[in-house]
View 1 (cartoon, rainbow, N blue to C red):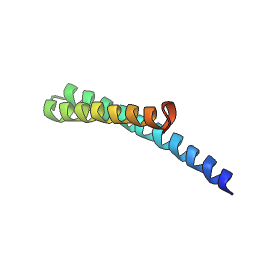
View 2 (cartoon, helix red, strand yellow):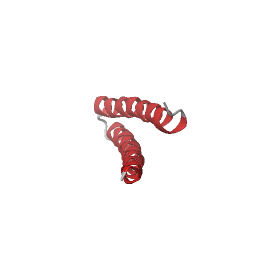
View 3 (cartoon, rainbow, N blue to C red):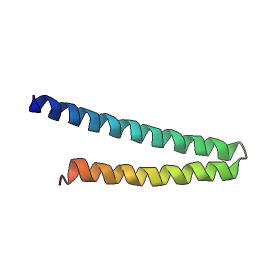
Length: 69
């Protein structure tokens, strides 16, 4: 039973990482669309949030997958 929960845990971790990375890319693309539509402040906010979120996703990937504790 413990092995099943370990597999489910890793599937959840990989799924969460993929969803977070995809959401970050979509928010960044939305920011560029806002900049093109002359809503520069909203676009800059989306891009800033996307960059900060990308840094957190990279930190999470490093912490969970590359350098396991």
